[in-house]
Length: 282
Ligand code: AMP
Image (cartoon, rainbow, N blue to C red; front, side, top):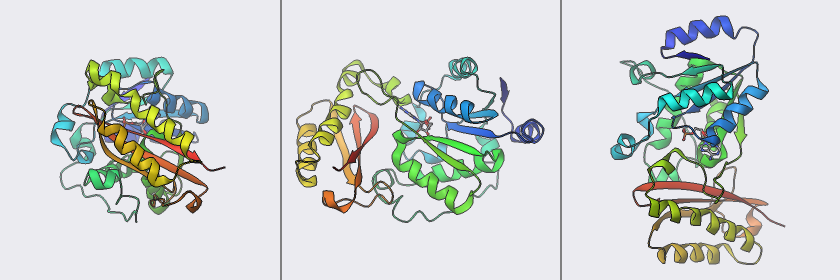
């Protein structure tokens, strides 16, 4: 496994090594878990060469404390990637990604960055678009892999690719969960014992919503979620929305769309967790 930290070295390496080879790219912020590894495995199976980047992108953090405490375990990450069979790992510094005078393009994402994460984390998606477009410009992969865990981010990346990177195919990957249902996340490492015990209730409540979707109205289910979290001493609801999965327009009734996406953000102590579930109408 080749480990490269400089942009110029990576560009030279790729211009030689990936000639006539398909390249699959998995961007991450490290503290890798099986969710990330499932993306890397998919990239390995669908391409001649796989590349995983590890970069904790400061521009997508709207909260300085969140950035400060973001887990960092590079040695363990590299061991895991080596064992998985990843070909190249890119571990750039901040100045490699954002050299002095660097200015990214700005994009119009329509409604996609105005709701949910866009509303509660101002500037977050500008930061995501900035880093992903910089990485796409450097790496120029044929395929790039993104998890459905970050459903809204995936919608933004699809739009970004559609606007500026038509040659890159965006491959969505399903959410990997712990045995108790909690969506795997690097932030789970930061949960206290009490909050780790409480956290699976987020997914249990999403499952309840899915089960009730054909018998209860959207507003009844939103009220039910609000009530459940109000009574929960360890989990604080930030938002719960049911929307159309393509444009993320809020759904008002089930007949609005054939499929809806229910997205949630919750604080477990100071740790912010997000999750989502697809609701198919029958
Ligand atoms: P992150 O390191 O949190 O920026 O995540 C890197 C990529 O891994 C993103 O495309 C995430 O959506 C994806 N990812 C994170 N957690 C999971 C999970 N539990 N299942 C599937 N993909 C995930």
